[in-house]
Image (cartoon, rainbow, N blue to C red; front, top):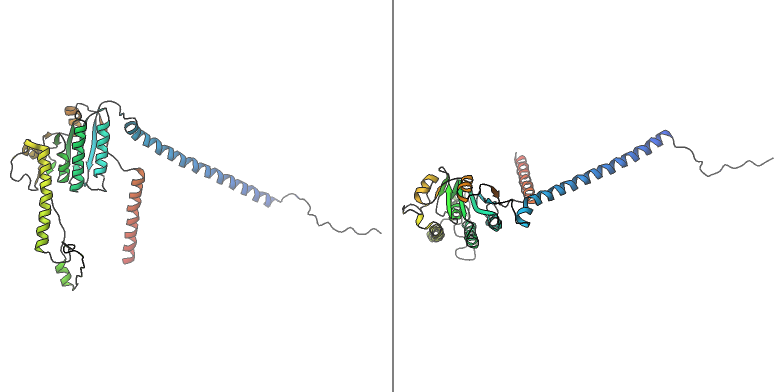
Length: 321
């Protein structure tokens, strides 16, 4: 009698069942979809990067790298908003725009388009000095200032660096003065029983502290400081405007006037706009804007910063409520 054969331990090949086949097919399909999706996103981001590069090239290559702007034109540089070191009207941005405008061989005249209530006397003076330097370096390229809504205080300090100043009859011009303001909370603190403890090293380090009583000698010192800055402002206006200024006694009092009155006082040469000055004075009606704009990264970071601060404020408000 033959011995019974032992069963083999080797697995027997068998075709996969339907559910296994469907599972494998689904996994393969999903992997393929994921690869296609990743490839599409990669193409999208590469396209965005390419578009950004092309945009930068279109905006800056013609002027900055090639030194051409497509024929004779009038260059415009904006001084818009408060003049401050971290603003769109900072000396760094305005001077960079002026430099580009004067360096272009096709520029027939440069216009400072001003719409600003003023700001930092230091930033305004830096722009004024740079404009004087560029005018000397490019004696054949005139510089004009055109005031739109307002060109007062530090903005007028910038305007007087131009060969001529134009404005609308309703523009606000002047305000040749200097100010410093603040608040005093001494009586409020006394009412609520709050004691001020101010420690300083230096006799005048706590000058004009809003939570301490004002001292007569501190006020006198600050008035003298403002007076010295005011004299610098007056000197710049007189140097820029010369004999065109009237002898009105209140010309340097800090008052401001309309553009129409400014013509009578010698603060403005004539009424006009950017387009009329380009067409009738410069003789090149084509206008090219040389204003230095914030970069894409800077604009995004500012918006993100504003959004983040708003979210924090909203969150705190929610917690308080």
